[in-house]
Length: 355
Image (cartoon, rainbow, N blue to C red; front, side):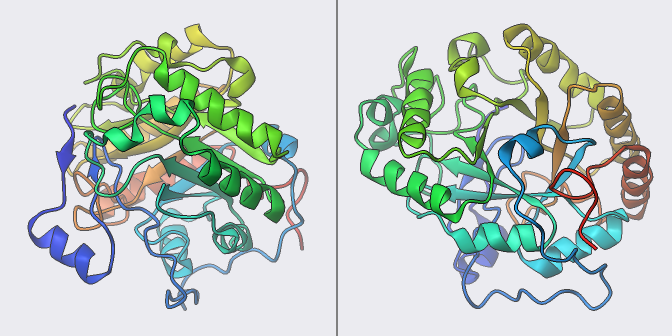
């Protein structure tokens, strides 16, 4: 699929009024988590289920050995508690993973991680090496410059911030690299063969040097539909990746399997690692409830899938389409029913939730 800019018309007015920068996206990436300011309302919705009590800090290994599927979601202002509560109320279950986005103009914020854990979820940080808006042509952010050390001071500072706050973080660095819509993409911005994998390894090595060992590294290409870059050449190697991932959205297909199967098969050829569905959703369509039902069946049929993240965004909130399951009664019912069939991860630690 081609990169599209959503920074136009009514959407732009909404986002600019909120103080949020615009960005480009492919299937669904937008300004998720763009607002973490002190003025954000962190109070829970009066009708939503209460978040779990303060957790005991899990280890990275405990999170990787999860018994059950992570139910993840990205909302417009993750980790705004009222948004998480609204998703929980619609889905009938609380999310155990919350995804948010940071570009390279922003520093790591430990308060965001603490708030996500306070809500009973694991943070998935999508870390985007570019400026907003995310136009593909940003020579300053070429993967060659990242690999050569031009950003080492920033990366080191970020790694130390992640390390010092101690809580584990899923780091989804430079996602959808097999497309052509981001400056780190394999076939954009003057990037050369081998540059992406070298940049990934360089960033990973800095985290290792700084003993930021509380990171789950998630390598997350787009589904093969609409892309041309070879995934094998973009893979940095087993020692540098904990989870494989894929981003795939329903654009009118009758089943989620049609979207996910070809990429899942290819990923399993590349490495024997879990495959996280790290971004998904479905456009408004009469078949959306059926697509959602099939998504949950697909997850249940693939034990190597440790979880998924649903992109709960409208067009005004950065989605290419209105991907929200909660916005349509039939889709909401299908989502809640499908979620109830999965064995879900109920708390981000080994064993029972705190009482």
